Image 1 (cartoon, helix red, strand yellow):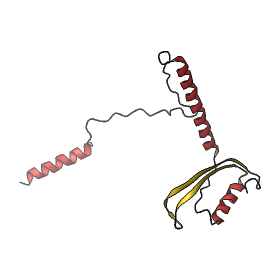
Image 2 (image 1 turned 60 degrees about the vertical axis):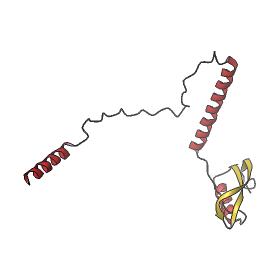
Image 3 (image 1 turned 180 degrees about the vertical axis):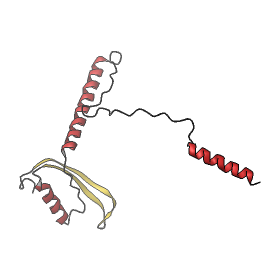
Length: 144
């Protein structure tokens, strides 16, 4: 269906039979399959429609990857490569010669500037509340 619709299966992984979190249609286990597809925009909707129709498929989840998701995955991959290269370099130098480097966030994930902390006043009570409390205590003293 994918290749016939002009798409390409990038990854097909059978994750095996697993116990379901709850029974679905009287079944307590199911086969999990991960399929990553590169396709035109209309093809994923058709694949999901076919999965809803097929009685053998009790549950499915179709996720359309966005540009932001691709960028995050690319940044994660780059960061992992940097860490692996740094670990390999440290292993070659030995523990005495390796200098600890400050970890910089990957490009695009720089820390946002934080607003300065506002000082907390020593007296937590509001002036109006203090006046109300004083009036109540005076009223209690005159009633005796």
